[in-house]
Structures are given as C-alpha cells and as structure tokens.
Length: 141
Length: 142
Image (cartoon, rainbow over all chains, first blue to last red; front, side):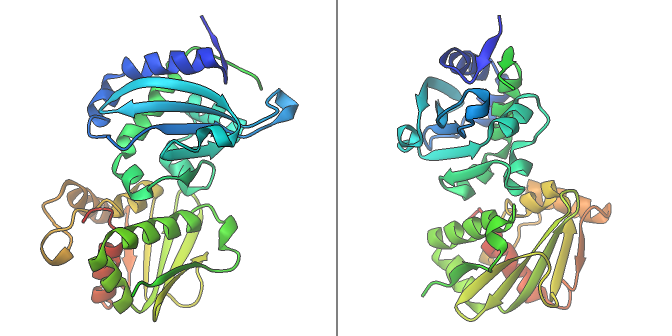
C-alpha cells in the first residue's frame, strides 16, 4: 500500500519504518534531545498551500509518536526543525540526497536546534532518511 | 568576552557559510575554553569542499570571526577535502589540553584520508598554532 507524501498516513507509516530500522535503533540510542520536525515549504502549484510539518518524537532509538501539522507555528515546540522544499524532500526520500551534505549545501536548513548536537548524530540522521526510503510513497510532483 | 561570529556580506546565501557560522557560534556559547581559544586566533583559514564545488574562508580578527563565502584574501591555511571529511573535522575527538586525540576513531579516519590524499592541508605546518586552535573551536566535542 502506498502513502501520499506528505500526509498523516505517510507520517504514521514513517514512524513504523523508523521503528523497524535496526540501524536507527542502534545509532539513535543516545538521542535524548527531543522531537525533530521536518517541514515542507508551501507550494500551491503542487497542492501544498501552507507549510506542513511532520513532528517525530524520537527518543533513545525509538520514534514514540508523530504529528502531522500545518503551518510553521505548529512545529515551533519541537527542539529541532529542518526545512526544505518539496523537491528536496522527495530527493531525500528517494535516497538521492545525503541529509548532512544537503545541509552543507543549504538544500536542507536546520532553522531551529543545536547544530553541534545534530552533527554528533550524523549516522542517526542518515538512518532516519534510510527509514523514509522504505515507506511506499506516492509523490505529488 | 566572546568573539562575535559574523557572516560577511554575501555569505548569507551561501550553502555552507551560515551553517559554519552557526556551528561556531553554538560551540563557543557552550564552551568557555573554546571562546578563549577563538579570541587568541588570528589569520585566515580557507576550506575547499571539493565534491560540492564550494569554499569558505574563516577570518579570525580581534574579537570576531568572519565567515566569508569563497576564498577571500590570502589564506594562511587551506584545507581541501570532500564534504564528508570536512564534517568529520568537526567531530574530531579532543584529548588533553584540547588537542586532537590521535587515538580517536575520527582522528584515525582523517589521518588515513590524509595519507590517501583525500584531504590536503596547505600552510598547516607553518601555522600549526592556528591549525590546532581551529580544530579546538570547530570540534563539537568538549
């Protein structure tokens, strides 16, 4: 079964994929720094009239819950916020973009959060992306 | 006293320069010893990220660090490496007196990459104190 990206159903499927990823469980084990929000910037031309966010409550190698929200205000409580446009997220989900390299290029932007902490969890971030590639995804564009 | 971390005009739109400025700012906020080290640094360090075709220059002046997009001025030290290794430099393990710990996993990996020619340093030996201090302020480890 495929899930439309972005959607609440996709976000739930992503949670399952993260929790099924042994690599994330290992590398994310020391992570106790709070939820990470992934924000897709609004793009009305593909049917995203407002920014949408997926808040992943990751803790000690497990994703304890998710929220699919609309608008930047809704993600502000997350300690870490990563923002990109739809095309960049799609490339990430297809495994074509490395998350850290993309941040260095400015394609993914950490708009909130402690960068040194994020850098200590490079492999954990990669495993989050690997998990996303395991979700059967239906893209908007 | 804390050195100001400044983005040079035009660097705001560069991919890596704002990230590097954020990393330095947060690192210095977290560690008083790194702040003291940064205050003692003078000179220019250029980083060329070979696989991304990008470069940045860190200019250490009294009470400030300026991050420029591209190579600006004549660097005292130039580091040429791929993005993976440039990021690894910020994860270098520090040992006694804040010096790089050669027994660390990242240190070993970077040494091997240097021996293989994947990382090249220019001017590092002639500017060893600048290089050592750069490692200390860049590293996300205490």
